[in-house]
Length: 394
Image 1 (cartoon, rainbow, N blue to C red):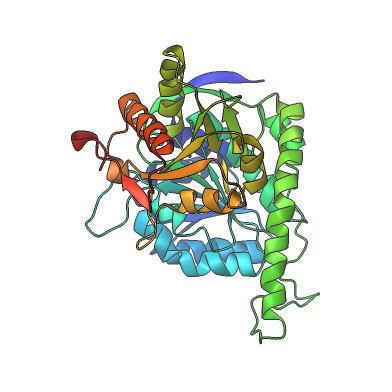
Image 2: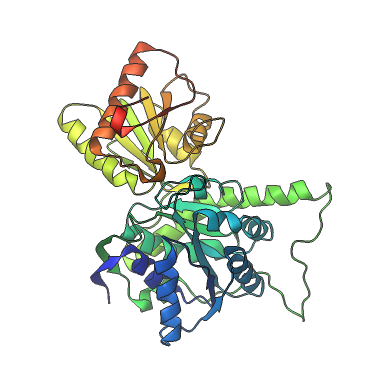
């Protein structure tokens, strides 16, 4: 039976993970991820969740523990933020390279230095090339639903890659909102017990992560790319199954909002999208032709869907909450690559909301107006423009 509860975002994630019945959970506390794993630890201690919760002495150790559990054929889960995610980097690359379907929550938080505990996407964006699948969620409800689907996606025999659900720290993890929970019977029907394709077994010896020379390494990396391409189709198939069984909307690679015949299309990810939708509603009521493309799956990147939706627009404004130093916003680079063979639309990159700097509907309006002005003037804009709410647009 489904019911709606007012939940902190972290609690919604913990309930989703609990319902997926992981055999091993391991994590090291770091704000703003801590509430998720605290709640899971309490569930295990209280006998509500039949799982092995393994204490670790660092994020690297936590990732290594769930890596080992996954290699042994056990459904496994971890979570981290910021510097903790970077400490997991080596293990995450290994998990993708050895095709182990562990699931983790990347709670977005700025990276040092200087130190900040506020939200931006620099931490998870830094892992975009590791071979893991990345989803960015807009709300606690979406985070709840996506974690349930993440295990099914990761464990699909055609994919077998780690999946990370990226959710904005504090804004989503520590805010309360209504969440419609799914009954355990429906979740069990959607997500059967894990049956590993490959695992460590003395009766059937295997080697994971062995040394690879140039005669096989490129082929193995190409297989990961092939799995990413297959994932674009599989994600939508699994989402359809999720909707059929649970009644909840399934995962999408992208979500279009008011893009039909829009002259300007904004592109963004994460909780920022809610503000963007509100701003678009206000601008459209003022006669401004603007729409939104929400990127849900950053890896695999939905280039085809973005091309299909955006090719008739006059201009695109991409909002990044992270930055590739010496270049520009990672999301804008992907969008430009997807549309590189088109004469239009013109694409403008904006950096906004680093370290939790507030992004309001007025900020979105300013970005839209700046994009329309630049597109009409045909002036050359290279790289990213940095958005400063206090001193307008730089």
